[in-house]
Length: 98
Image (tube, rainbow, N blue to C red; front, side, top):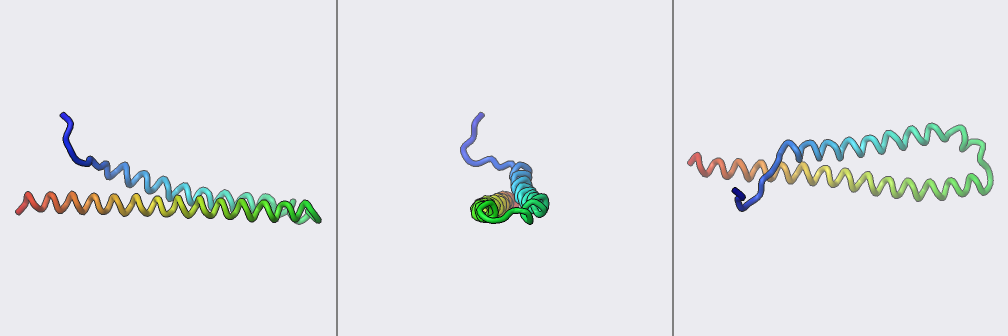
């Protein structure tokens, strides 16, 4: 039988928020490794190669920062929503407990 209302999977929301936060950390770690991997090559680049890389990297860094921030904000929003759902569940339970 279908019921009206919202059914919340708190564990699923917790997992989703954790997965998003882990994604942010993985992106940050990968960017650090990539930068470390390129250090030697970057030292050899001169002229237009260096300039082109610098311009492209600024664009990549901006896009990665934007994506990372979006994932972090989404993770926090999921956590907050789950906390709000838990509080609403508790208020509902308290109504039955008098």
